[in-house]
Amino acid sequence: MAFAPGSGRITRHVLSRLKAGLPLIGNIRMINHRPNHNTEQLQRDFSENRLGIKEITKNNSEEFLSHYDSIFLDCDGVLWRTDHVTPIPGIPAVMRKLRDLGKQILFVTNNSILSRDQWYQKYLKYDFDPGKMENIFCVAYATAVYLRDVLKITGYVYNVGSVGMERELTLAGIKNIGTGEDPEKPSPYVKDLLNMTFRNDVQAVVIGFDEFFNYTKLYKAASYLTDPACHFVSASSIGFGTGVMIGPNRLQPFTGPIVSAVKTVSKREPILIGKPGYHMFECIKATHPRIDTSRCLMIGDSITADVGFAKSTGMDSAFVLSGSGTFDHVKQNPHLVPDFYMDSLVELNYDS
Image (tube, rainbow, N blue to C red; front, side):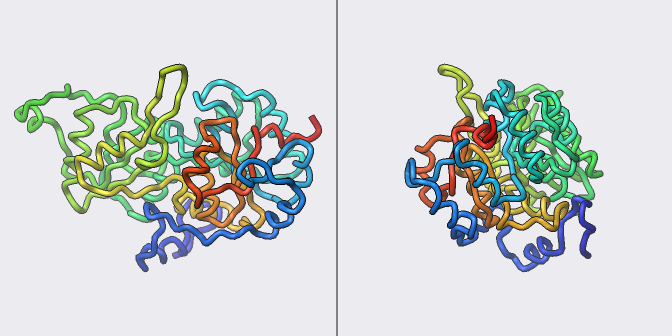
């Protein structure tokens, strides 16, 4: 059964790949990416800079943008700093510029803290119009779609994640438990652990960002996963989103370490939903079926997540230096060299 465009449901293509046992999520399907006609022409126009990657500046961004119709934007480190709060000067103006040029702007983020409607309000708070809700693809939403349309969950989901994840699960009609602080006090004693409350109809454990993660939640998540029929679904993985420096000698952990802990105890491999996983792109294609990847550009600050996502889908990539990513990350991932780089998204506002 195919789903109507704009419904947010998974297409027949993704279902057929799953039935055929083809890699879709977790084991990333990397297209043998070669520069498309856009990249080839632009590489002739722009001089080489760091590591042979072409730099985009205000001097050449007008010509650069003429090759793309759809702009995929990561959020943290691109639209604001990696602390999720500090604005990047000039972002509202460049967003208006992209709108005036008629570009389709899609927001694609692995941050699982917020739901789509919460992301919408955040964009407005930072003084730019995100357009329609259908342009926002956060990993909490993509996870809910996957659970509903691919796994077809009818029982409960144990959510080791945020209120935003809970909201997307609920909006998708998925019953869930576990959000927030667990009411049962952590204990090392077997008697206490055996007396803790469990449901017998939990069909999936979902891992996202959870500031309340503790020993009790680890115990419950791993225990549910002892049932081989219980699915292990993650908004991130050990290698993606481990943490970021937020100040001198202050390292904030992200979702990756939580996934690592549950994986270690349960001895299970999670299904990865977020970038660079192909499932996120299937969600986008289900909503925007006319997207032409040869005219798409992914802009982000993560080599593994954002550039990896671009290469897994066959679109071009631009790496921004305004977030957590550095050229050392490029050197560490020679198979994920971006097509272009820029100091920040502001370089695209060539009239300023």
